[in-house]
Image 1 (cartoon, rainbow, N blue to C red):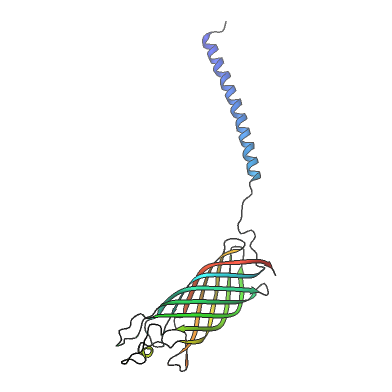
Image 2: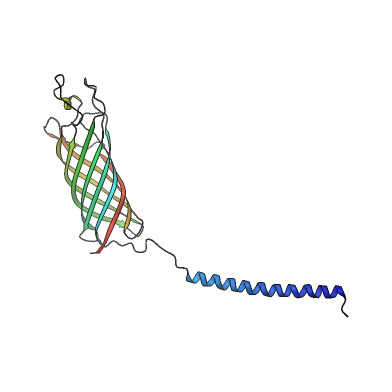
Length: 239
């Protein structure tokens, strides 16, 4: 007859063997399931469908522009507004782009006896021209454009003539309300978010040709910087 101590150790060994067998089987099933799940996993790439063969695109962005409301002002004007632009692609690297932009804000004024400070002004731009697609991949692209058109500047909205100051526009050193030629030189920095949606940054230099007292036009080269940030949508019609 087997001693109690021997029976105890024999039972313990049998339980250990059984536990090892069950654990090995469970591990094998787990490994098999992991391999199966890994084999069925398909990574998702939101940029997989990015292409550069669309016919049209449209972008809308919040816009900023710095300019001077008069030829001799020391203080500039920081204007905010909206930039809406669209393109029609004729070739892979070339398109015709059109833009409409509106800017609003206040400007510093020359010292004056009227006590006018920070008068309100507005600008509205409509321009079009060639657009060129530069380096690009599925993550983003760089584009350049040169746009030509007209700008309507409203500088006299807060300025009113009086018996003491018959010409308040001249007194504060502003341009008169007028339509002027405009050139926009710059481009786009695009970051693709999907096949159709693009995060867009548009830095530009804006050259205007305003005149004072309805006289000769003066080209503004100094600190005419503008930038807009927004989203672009690509229409998926193939070229």
